[in-house]
Amino acid sequence: MTGLDIIIPAMHPAACVANVLYSLSRNTVRPDVVSVVSNELDRDDVPNYGLTVRVIRFASEHYLVGERDVALRRNVGIWSSTCSHVLTFDDDQIAPPNLVESSLRLLEQKPYFWGHYRYADFSAHGADELLRMEAARGRPREHPPNAWHQWTSCDAGLFGAERELVQRLGGFDLIFCGRQAGEDQNLGRRLAWHVDHHAERVFIHEPPFAWHPEERIALAKPRYRNLCSGEHRLIPAWVSHVEVRRCEACPYFEVVTGNLFSSEAVLPFDPGKVATIVEGVARTTDRQPG
Image (tube, rainbow, N blue to C red; front, side, top):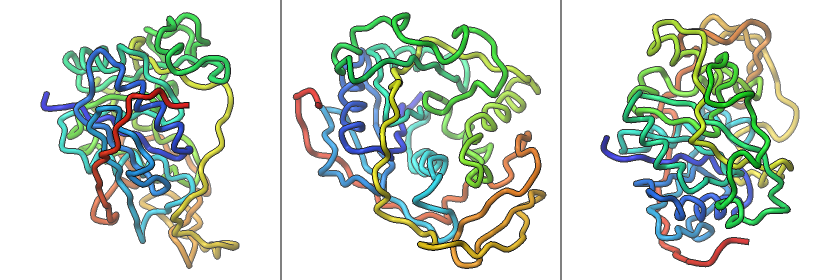
């Protein structure tokens, strides 16, 4: 293993990202790099808490940006990484102190894993309190964790893998952008198919786990969008074997019908269709966010 890069698709306000970085800085083992993929944050908005942090901004004429683009952000971070392994982590979560250590242990045994998260009331618990809390105090997402589940239980809020393995499978399939969900479950199915000999189940591990807020946190307003400001001009089209309605004026599309879950990516990520700017974060602080 030549490094772990934690990919954070940042779509919430800067305070959420600061909480994530603070919790990662309190881990028993620190990640080699943390990549914040965001057009809404500048590097001056992000403290590093002593971590190696970079902010990745991106633009594209081919992929829709500014709406339903979380899978694209994860792919941008994965393809921009130089580490051997990546871990995707959502920006509204808090990492417990053993997250990195337990993730590395799993990645030594297998080329990928799916983690778990526990719901907690963030308004009642500060970051330091969550760092001290036992997982059992939170409401589990899956019943039970540390068990085999259908691949529909895969959640990219906590997912780790060999970077080249994810790239070889096309990344998070961008055909799901029109449906707003399913990219992570489909990647779970494809990994089980290719790595685990056509398996239909995945193991949901705990640890690692992440603290996830019970309350919904409002997203930041997109700073950059490449979509129509008004109504889309949709026309019939096809992406591989999938019927879609595509906008004539922007990259927006909607899937019409069909089961999108398959053993191969329908719309694999192409890094040549995205422009990126990568900046290191220099602002340090020891103060707890909040």
